[in-house]
Length: 64
Image (cartoon, rainbow, N blue to C red; front, side, top):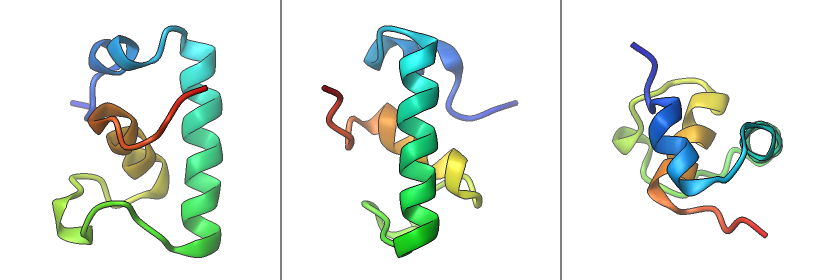
């Protein structure tokens, strides 16, 4: 099963398109700078995109 679920993520972000845009940009930022907002052992996903989605779910990214 994919974590976090799309249903939980859409409670934080109002559209799927915005969610894709935010998570893709954050994923690229993680790859470029290797900066994470949580300690590495707290993430369930190993890849950058999954980690970006986890940050969205936890409310660590501000959405404007």
